[in-house]
Length: 386
Image 1 (cartoon, one colour):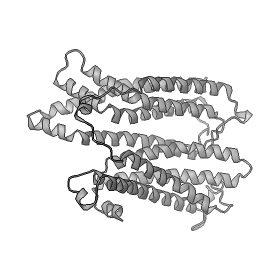
Image 2 (cartoon, rainbow, N blue to C red):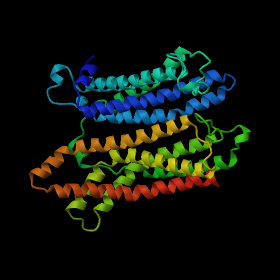
Image 3 (cartoon, rainbow, N blue to C red):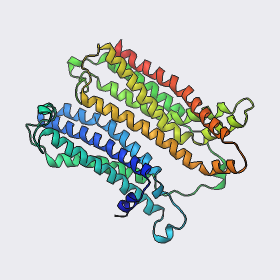
Image 4 (cartoon, rainbow, N blue to C red):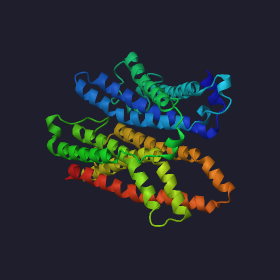
């Protein structure tokens, strides 16, 4: 109840971010229900239905990541002086954030269920002249218990993830604020990227669609080997691990060779925020590279109907959620250094210096991650189109 009252009094921008989480949850819920419809309509192909369900984990994970990022930037769950006196300590605020995340995702799941039933014709008859009847198995009854179980997965997982991300932590000592270690995930990230690309290459050359070794995605494109998807997942994890190290390295390079005020400020901020920005930036890099590789595969097949509408919906959800997560992380980073920015303005620092430093940070990250994304996309598309 307290979470609902806080939602009524939130800023419109905060409410918009929550509605975006609900929209993403609706898309994921619709994909899960379509997978259930396929399983109901094809009872003899249980392994294919299971693989389709596993493929839906990707947009679900992207939506959970976005929901956690929105919960971290929610001002109503940020500890403030005086709240503990009225019973709103850090633990209670964490519970409120988890409840708000669960409510937003549950709202999206409810919209997905209503949309699914409407397209099946269970509410007001078959719309669009029954165009979606075969896809949604409109001639079969919906197992309500299974549908509700699938729709409950996202709210539960997102709430637990938000609670773990915002759980109260002990304050760092003065020495630990002074010593900020370099992110150590770069070597592991590079290794996972190499392993992922190797698995993609091996799977794309050894898997044969006619031999039944394909991974059926929602819609079409049933000939994609399962190893290709596994390799892409490993590549994504590798880029997420390598992202903070790459961002930290960009900050060091900006401060090299007698830096001025702008380069020094940009480099220090980038090093301090490398963990917060680098991980979602690495995920976006992996998603964009995967999109470029899929586009190359689409062109190689002559633009035929290799990708169905549900495959496109899942890809759009992944791309939109990861991009929104990156933008939300950038907003969180800006909120975190608000006191530093205010102090610089008080001592007379011109606003042009702050803007130039922000543009320099963005340019440095773009100069590193854009070629990396293109290279990974080319390496991933080469075995698929060769």
